[in-house]
Image (tube, rainbow, N blue to C red):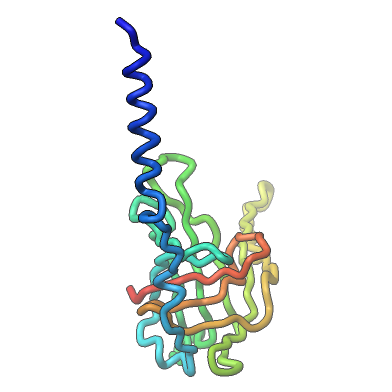
Length: 191
């Protein structure tokens, strides 16, 4: 049996369907989230909730990318302690998660950031000193004395954009592990 006519028909069918989609299949480069109106935050009172769950990110010219429920990033969150009577009244905490090294189905804390001296510096601009805090615990063998050292590394100090867009809180990223040159915005929803 001669396979040439069948092979030729298959190639023509694939090529024909690709060509027929030509101009009809113009990709939509719109970014529905990032192109929606942005409203700069005036006051932390507008936040309402103090826990905000991570929803996705906008990196440079790329479209907004929503996070999937199967991803450990679904556990990422920002916790605001602003204007409260607690001792943490000028703080924000950010927790980021990754796949556990023990079991792939579990998630574990990747890193956390502590924002201190948080205040609105102007409409849509939040000032913060952002730190990495690590705790080192040593037990001395001879004396059985436990020593706890808090190691604080300044991660960022300055202003970052904050506001609302497409029903989500948008925060300029100055605190994650992203090391590229593009401007990054993280998006959060009330928990």
